[in-house]
Image 1 (cartoon, rainbow, N blue to C red):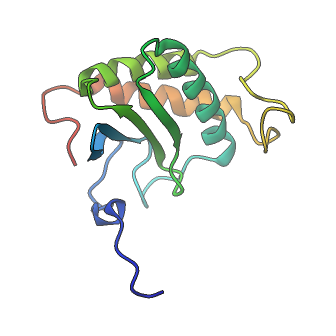
Image 2: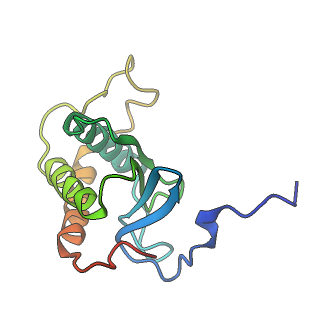
Length: 155
């Protein structure tokens, strides 16, 4: 068991990562984006309630906006410093950034019932924190809006 191959995400120098948007992987025709909301090992990670609420709201928002069905997945990182977003690679990184600005703006201003927030729809529906999610979404929205240039998405 000690001879397991090193996975790609462990080869990223997490001491250099800052909040931002990165291309994590490009496999076949799928692009994996790293939405880094927190600086690893320097900022407190997202609370599980915030991360869970952001996951529900952003995933629902992006799927509702994705009329061409190019989004494959949106979910939290185990370290709770951000999320992974998988799209088919014929969507440009700048288009992804614009979609995320819309999604995190929506989340920062969200009012009402979180999508999928019931025992029938979710395996841990009691661990959703809309107040923290809105605060974390607003902070990441500012990061997304500040990105510019053609190299913002590379590690």
